[in-house]
Length: 192
Image (cartoon, rainbow, N blue to C red; front, side, top):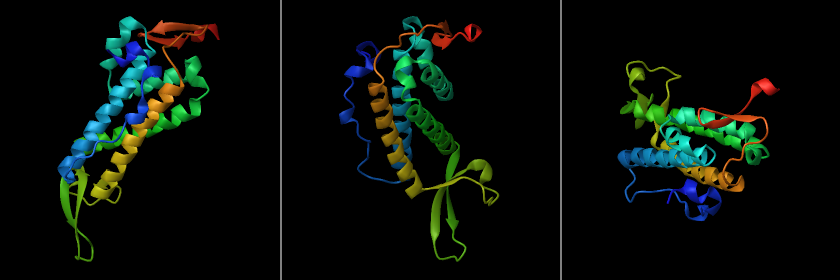
């Protein structure tokens, strides 16, 4: 049965743990990041579906990650159970946007080998393909250790999302002054 149908209040988040492979190399670490990002997107979709009109739930699941974040921002401002935790939600939304940017960087990068300035060490980094020809100081390069750290932050974010959603309770009950727009309940600006 779908989590949305059961309600997030029945979801036990104590068993959520990061997925770690037996062998940790670039391939497994990148795959791990993508899998954990997918779990984050699924949890976000479940939260949005729970607070969306029943006939619009499938449309919410098909939206792009960034669109889902925008819908979550609307809900945080208008959902009665989410308003009191607005600061926590907004901090989490900011972290989700940052991790989304990293996911996009990883998807458009390649693994490069660089020799340090003093020629004593070889480093491997994920670097965006458009930055390969130039050694730009502001080019985003992701090291193995940084990606490992981001994986842990991603799994912590997943746990935080589940806990925050659990604290904010069940299905969306529109407050006075709201109306359905694109399947989401939003404030009717004409009334204010």
